[in-house]
Length: 266
Image 1 (cartoon, rainbow, N blue to C red):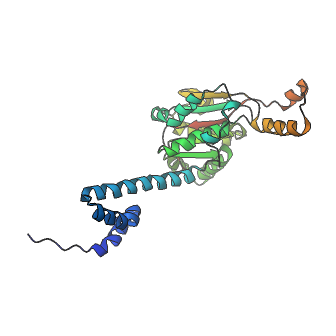
Image 2: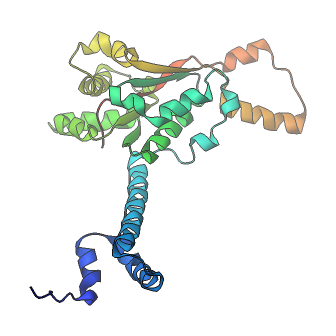
């Protein structure tokens, strides 16, 4: 059986057709090295395949981070662990590993305004994306508006189905979204979609807390602490009165929640 002639010059076009951009960029350098060092053909192919997979993972993570819409700079590396000593770092790192997503558990961060809830949940989400999960971060008011618009257009089911693509949905500032029955109903639609069909009016809290990990973050506001530190450096130490402390104390709110039973999107 005669050997078929192979046109090596057609390799770049073939790699483009196969959608192997990293293979396309590196094949010449690797084949030249293989010829010089006497590599077996299988070793050369394996090295090129490793680069293709690694760069594909990098592109996927970059794409999913853009899709997640996470606040910039809020990662575990930039989180002030000393500000919330009540939450062990090991516990957060375990959440960032993502095993809890397999069982459809929820995650709720409860604390005063400025305590770091958004930062902490965004940091966990960032780590989850890097581990291969798909996450969506959104302000609750923004998502409510999109769901209400979808309802008006008779496209609510499609909107909820798009959210199913995500392993985890993070709703920020949820306490500020429940202004009327229509807005509350939109949130309950999402919760019911990602849990099970139950009475929305009374079961929403049950759905969130049941099978949930709760992070209590009742500490002073990070922004207020930072401002106080700057003020102390310039003006010297000052002793605030109890009245002033009470005036600045914010009511604890279930500000940020994440429900993650299926995948979600916009």
